[in-house]
Image (tube, rainbow, N blue to C red):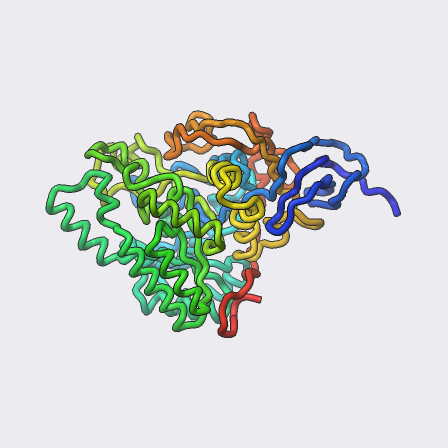
Length: 480
Ligand code: URP
Ligand code: ZN
Ligand code: ZN
């Protein structure tokens, strides 16, 4: 048998997958993992990882890049800066959203989004769809075709005037997902309650950023989560509740699971590292930087989220990177004004900090195991969107998307991040680790100090059917 000629060998790695941790050399050919084992033949290039953990590159399955917004708002990151930032934080696959505007064809939204991404990305990417106008044509002609072509997940909103669907429309979308084996992601907040509370707050002159949190208390998330679960049960289809913020939504999801329902859940760094106080203790506008929905809650709810990460409640840990500059007329100060909270664009940046925050405070902080970290940040997102085993694991045949971790003190500073946002909500947080090297399909994109750009190296990935284990006692239509 001839000895394979490796382009690159990572030596002496402490390899972590979602199920195992073992010592191995990793031999790479043509951007893929060709061999795993001790004492591999020499490579054309070698990197010694002695004493360091190597995990799969992260799969950030919920981020927003260059998503069209209403004038004058514009996202700060497109595919170039967003994937640059991802790579420097150890993420090698991103899944942002091709959003349908009301009245627009879904296919036109996908084509437009491809134009935005083509030739720009530094790491691989797939698209989720956002369905905001589920007409009979969209449901019966466009969605089935798009699912077959690799757009097999779509988000629906229960809030936001431009995007929200009513319950009947959500049922229609869920039904299509069931028939065609797609994954529906649900933004669960009760729009009418939010509008009612917002009007009350406005009438009382309470319009500073911090009142955003008062306009979206946990019960509006709890009610919508409960309703989303009931709608999915009616159709008998799995759903994913995205960006879960605290105890009341968690309780609903635990209840659904205990009744055998196929309800998956995602959470994000903001619900571990921010609280409503980050939206401001006084009427200062600075809190606009942390306006996102659902809003961050309090320390007790952070603990609930940590527990859900540790005990398996959460399937995914995503950034929900939704990048808007703070001090900019196209960002958090629309038209250059300090506006009432209802007009502040919702969302915060987080692509680059997602993996280091969880590795440092979760794994090194003793809250989750290393294998669970891999499962949450890479393996499960790849499985949920049909990208596994090409993505999300370290195995022979998988893409050589790898992170070698440096365990060293790091203080998060926006000036050291690589997005195009003028702040990070995590400024000043002290971490104990950062990616020391990121490989994307065998190419070094980040070496711990320097980003290695190659715009356009990122490829579009077609998503397949979810391959995450069913949790339902009922027959599963979508998951095998
Ligand atoms: O505030 C948020 N989360 N903005 C991004 C859009 C979304 O709902 O995920
Ligand atoms: Zn959302
Ligand atoms: Zn989002």
